[in-house]
Image 1: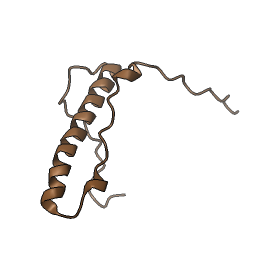
Image 2: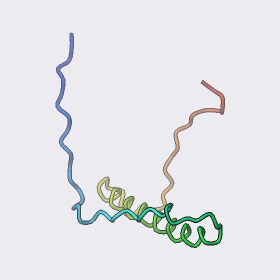
Image 3: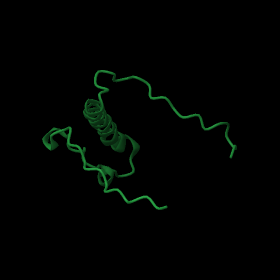
Amino acid sequence: MALPALPPPEPAVCVDQAQIPAEPPTVAQRFNGDAKHDLQILAPNAQALRKWGQDLKALLDGCTGQAGEAGTPVPQEDFGEAGEG
């Protein structure tokens, strides 16, 4: 007996789109191969990407009821020893 197909769930809006921070700009096109020059571009961009990710996580935590638990380690699933099945 086949089960009837269910419609996909409706997305639940928990954050106003205006609250979603803009992604930091890409910077690869600004590199010239000089390590010192490139690092002066890369370092602040890496910090901006980290802050952007943290801001997004805070929004998602608010949607899932996890707000205020920043820095709480996320349990990792045990996949066994390397090389196992």
